[in-house]
Figure: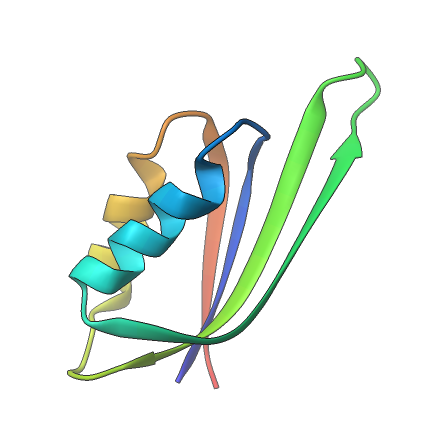
Length: 81
């Protein structure tokens, strides 16, 4: 199991795009949270965290690369649980 954290400028459809990437990598979202706060410039910033169970071994670098391609993503962290 892995914990994935995605920091991004918030927008409509962001969680759907993150979920699509995880699904394409044969991942199942066990739990997730998503919070939106505004930064010092009043820009809404999303912090998405999810615990993912992958059907097959997923390479962290592959997951990172695909999530970073999502528009407006600023940071991605993956932790093995």
